[in-house]
Length: 316
Figure (cartoon, rainbow, N blue to C red):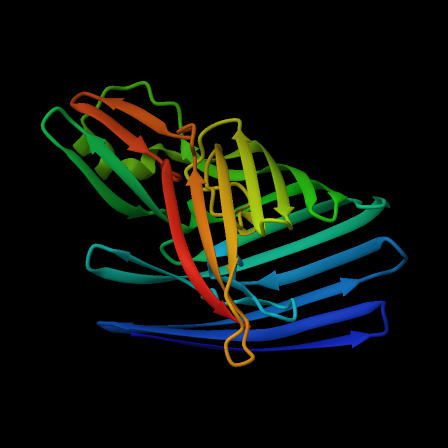
């Protein structure tokens, strides 16, 4: 049983200073009860034309699967402020604190550069991770949870955004930050020993990441296309800069998304439409970490290759 609610408010002083503030409360009961209170704060300063400075404290991570765009253009974040995971028959909660300071400068029409530093702190069991053990006799997958030290992160991000036309835009982001990966693995051990002693082989290390994204809209057919390509120096077990990973990509990969709107006739003064989407993840099957053991292989893959599709009906 879970209970979650939040309050949010905002204040704006002319066009120079804007503050958004609030808090979220989460309570989980599964045999025992545990509660978290997570404050949030965002301050945006516009000292001059073309400049924007932002500082924020947050616990809710917005991504495409839990964000709804309202008819007036406002974005509604429906995510939980607390990370709730199930491992076997045991439920757990982790508290997340994301702090960030960013400065953005518009350098030309449709072109902007943003520089930011961030830090993520996690209190609790941490992020979940699925590992697959492949032996000649069977294949078995299990979910484990990283600890607080292996889930917390910090780093810096440089992003260049370019709006080419009203229907065409792109961006390139470079991140240098901490992430958890498997250390150099030279000894031969059994899969059972590795799975039971996995924490001994994990370590935090600084990694380079480059993410390129491309978005296009075709007004004639009401089609939206999104392509994202990500590269890492290694194969991290958790994404570098997790809070900015809106598509939940996780590892190095090539990803594509297609959305097609199908309008419906006017029914009693209400307009509606079908949205058909196809999401192709990691089409090149990248980012896997495979460790050879005496009785087979142990595979770590945050972003398995997949094709997902769906249909939604919206009324406005």
